[in-house]
Every structure is written in C-alpha cells, then in structure tokens.
View 1 (cartoon, helix red, strand yellow):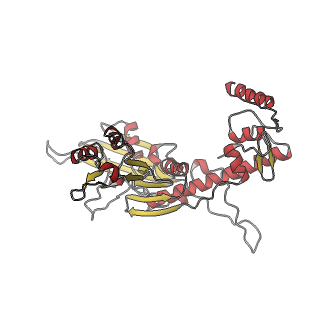
View 2: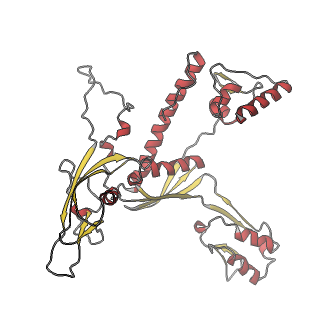
View 3: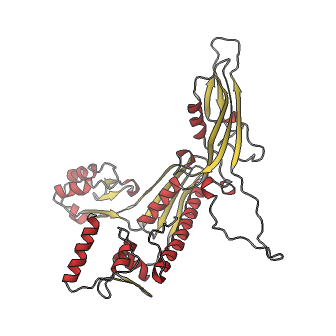
Length: 398
C-alpha cells in the first residue's frame, strides 16, 4: 500500500511539472521493475521510454533498448586437483560471480541416499540417527545426468528427435530414478572381554549390480591407505544392523546431503598504490609502526631502500587499518587500496561426489538453463501484453 501511495505521489508530481503519464493496459501494480517500466512507459520497437520523451527507465530501459556493454568473461585456471580448484573469473559483473557461487552450492545435482528401510536394528543408534549418517555419505555422481529426479518429471526442454526414415519421434529409454544399496552387519565375538567393537563402514555397503560405478567415495580402496572408508557405526557382539538404502538424484536447495561442495568462496584482489615519496617524511620507526598496523602483515619495510613494499597482496582482507594509521601519522593518501574491477578469484572444494571442475561446469549449465526459461517466459508475457489477451497473473516458471 505504501509503495502504491508513493507511486501515485510521483505521478501527481510529474503531472504538476507538465509531464505526461502513460498507462499501459494490462499492467498490474507491484514493485517489479519490468511492471513499473510497463506502467510508466510504452513498449516500442527500440525499447521502453519514460514519462517524458527520450527519458530512460534505468535498468529496464537500458536492458530493453539493448544499450548494455557487451561482456566477454574469461577464466584462468590457477590450480587444479581432484579435491580443489582455484580459478580467476575476469571481465564480468559481481552479480554473475555471486550467482555462479550460489548455484554451485545449491543447484548442481548429485546422488545421495534419500530413503532408508531398516529391517533390523538393535544397536545403540536409533533408526533416524543411522538414516541421517547414511544420507551424508558422499556418493560418486559422475553419472548423475543419466538419472531423472522428481523435479524433472514435467520438464520438456529437449526437442523430440525425429527418425528421418519413418518421420516418427525416436523413443528413448526411460532414465533411471533410483539405485538400491544394502547393508548387513553383525558384531563379531572375538572371545575377549576387551575386544574392540566391530566397525561398520561405507565399505560394508553392497552396491546395486545394475550400477557398479555408483558407490560411496573411496569405496574399498584397499591398496591406498590414505583413502579410508567412512565409519557409520560400531557394533558390540550380539548387535546387528540390516537395511536397504535408496539413492536418488537431488540438489542442495532441497537438502545439504546433495550439496557437492565442501566450500565455494571468491575474493576480489586488491589494487594497492604506495606513494613512497610521501612516506619519506616518516622516520624509520614510524614506517615500522605503519606496516605493523596491518593485521594480515602484507607490508614490509625494505631494509636496503627503506621503502614500504607489498609482500603478498592476495592475503589482504580490506580491513583498511594501514590506511587509517597513515592518516594518523599525517600522510593521508600515501597508501591507497581499492578492489580490482571485474576480477574474482574462486576456490571450489569438493566433498568427493563430483570433481571440482564438473561442479563449475554443472553450475554454468544450470545458469544457462535458467536463462533460457526466463527469456522464453518473458517474451511470452511481453507479447501477450503487447498484442492483447495477456494475463497479468501469469507466473514465470524459472
């Protein structure tokens, strides 16, 4: 209500200044910038105009008129292992970098144990606790795209492939939806009161013979002592567990067990400018006091030239302590620090379910899919509103 009141005040002010308000039929009230642009302007062949002729409508007017600066993002791989990936993303906006980070965390599909049927359990752990531990075991998901999740049942993005000989659509095999694991373990009695309990690990899980490549990470790597299995529980003599676990495809947005990332972060490298001519007014002790004020210790005084230098700018955390210290010492502006524009350094660490580079590629694939759906639905809504018959209550399915 308050927003509508403000908009009415703005319209009355525009009329008082001699402006002209144009109302487009079918445009509903709301805070969406597209809707506001439609209410305040008229959609023309070259874009959207505002209340006065030639007046831009900000973001929407810029996007609609096609005057955005074209981007050509670049990626530079810094280091890559089976567990972590470091790369630079250049020449793109902060919003794109953050969208990529968020999609990697929440919308890259993996496989995880989703349903557990407990047949027998007399251990010290209750059924819910065991189910939770099984769900958090990372499952190798390199074949995840061969499976179909519940949220993909109604999707029809791919066009039907037509057989050129018959002219009929080629029937494809139905994608699998589940993989079934089994676990049966009994506590061993070794004939001693001080026997160690029997460990039940991910190596004790029986795989689905239909999908031998889908298994817990580091499954039965007996020849590599560094790759140890994940402990599920410990059994005393007489204790036993028997269950069936169903593995399904999902995304981290639904549950953290489908999150393929241990961590995904990005940082913006700094641009550091040091004016040693101004710093020459300081004594050697003041220079040492200046560099010691930086918590990350990325500055030092060169013992030969007595000038302040940067040791490792990658460790800087934008605390601005040294900038404030320079102001207190009377050399304000001697050290200037700002963010490097359109430059982001990513660190992606995997849980083991997917290699780090596949997480990045999967996130880009998901982003492209979302943009295709957004473009399709936006064009449909705009064409319906432009040529009549549109429904303002139409919901975009992105």
